[in-house]
Length: 303
Image (cartoon, rainbow, N blue to C red):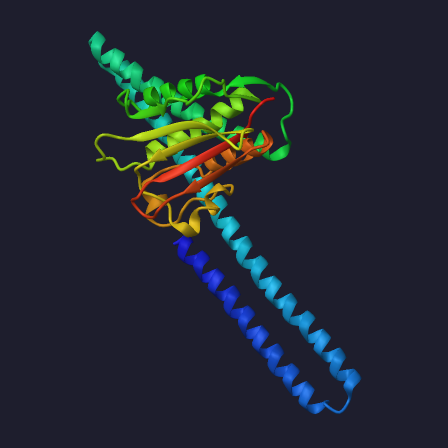
C-alpha cells in the first residue's frame, strides 16, 4: 500500500511538472507572437521564461528525490525493526521453553547456541546502525596504526564461516603472490567492519541451493602503491543500472532482492565511507542477473 502511494506521489509530481512546463511554454509562445515587434520585451520575456521553466523542472526533480529518500528511510526502519524483533522473539521463545519444560543437557546446549547466535545477530545490527551514524557525522582520524591486511582478511573469513555455519572451504583466500607484506595505515575495527560487510553480502546473495557455496577472495598490489581486495561470488548478481546506487545510505535494490533478502541498507554505505576515510575506494562489477558479483576494496599501501 505504501509503495503504491509513493509511486502515485511521484507520478503526480512528474505530471504536474510536465503540465506546468507545457502551460509556461504555451503562454510564452503567445506572448512572443503578440510582442514580436518589441525586441527588448521579447528578450526579457525569454529570460524570465527560461528561469520559470528551470524552476519548475528543479522543483519536480527535488520533489521526486524527496519522495524516494523518504521511501528509502521507511524501508530502512522496516528492515531494522525486523532485524531487531526477529532475534529478540527467538531468544524469548527459547528462554520460555527452558523455563517451562525440563530438557536434557544436549537440548539445553543447542538452545544456548541458538540464543548466542541470535544475540550476535542483534549486536551486529545495532553496531551497524551506530557506526553508520558515527561515520556520517565526522571523519575518524585517530588510532591509525599499521595493519597487515592478509591476517585481518583471514580472521574475518573465519568469523564469517562460523557465523553462517559454512564449510571451511566455502570462502577461500587466494595466496598472495610474492613475499611482500601488504600493510595499510588505518583503524583495524573499521576495516574489519568493511571486509565483514562485503563477505556477509556475498553469503546472503548466494542462492540457498548453491552447492557448494563458492566465494573467492584475492589480495593483489595495483599500480605499485595500492592493495586491492577482491571478493567474488556466484550469487544473484547486480543489474548494471544499480552498480553505483547500491553504495548509497539506506538503498536496497528494488523488487525481489529487497523482499527475499533482509538487510538494513547500511552495509555497503559503511564500506564506501570506511574506504574513503582510509584514502581508498570500493567498486562493484557484475555480468548481470544470476551471474555473480565482484566487489573490490582498494587501499593505499603504507610507505
